[in-house]
Image (spheres, helix red, strand yellow):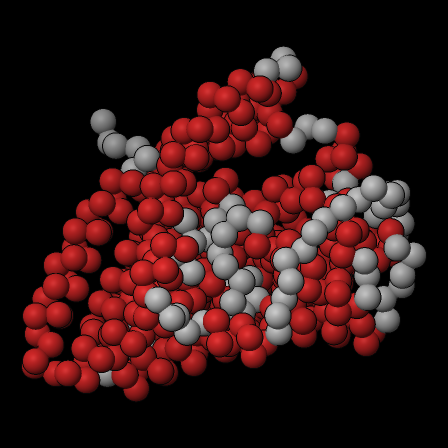
Length: 403
């Protein structure tokens, strides 16, 4: 018998997880998924987080060495950042359009914000964020999995090895050998993905069936419509226009990473799966090794759509009608805020707090939707990861290396 492919295993695990979750929810067994299923999902995600830093560090250095030219690294970096900034701005516009359509049609529920509480982490400003990108202790960056700092460390080491020339041959060989080992370990961990998807999906379905989920259903629908439209209009069309790849081929190739991102809600943890999907779609290893880790840190299209929908909804709860100027502020703030936000579960709440602060909307209102943030997070992370893969394929084409 032909072996079942990983994407099909993940899809089967997703469906089975939904079925088990519904049974547990209606049978009042949600506690069982929390106690006995979710821990296995946590173990799988822990394994992914354990391997993320060495994968990013070694894959980026290996990618830089494969390019063998820092000017090319700079060219790929510029194309990648411009792609992400443009798609994030488009995502904000799409999010605002859908949010205002729903609000204008009276579809957004009006909730009482009394008692809503959320303590946002303080944003210290652009210059402070810029300074924090550069590490003071390499091991601390690895310990905390600060992805921007790990990327900077990779760039420094990769560039330095190139500059050292023949004297750095031992370092080149070590990076190549160590990355081969990490790839084998990564393959083993990825093979466990169906287990992680099943356990997490069963837990989410079993525990999210609360009254607030029903009352916020239309807000969730609005956000997911934005996610779907953005994926179809921006990602599949960019793959079609720039790479001459059909939307069906693109989504089929990216499916495994999309499903895992949907259940794990972590673009950083999905990196190993994203790399395999990008390779399957024709992205060159060196370019994917550079684009995907960078994208997991700065590409937040799904988060941008979520912010716009949530901002319009929370503004209506606060009896605030956003002006055109304020909506432009949302687009600019959300786009810039995406730079430096970690690709981990829940990071969108920090960015939303920044947007609300810029508009003068009480940040405590986030407490109205924090209970269902996991539902939003699943879709926005899936979209973020899809964008990373699309970018790696497009940049490969622009660099003239697609086979």
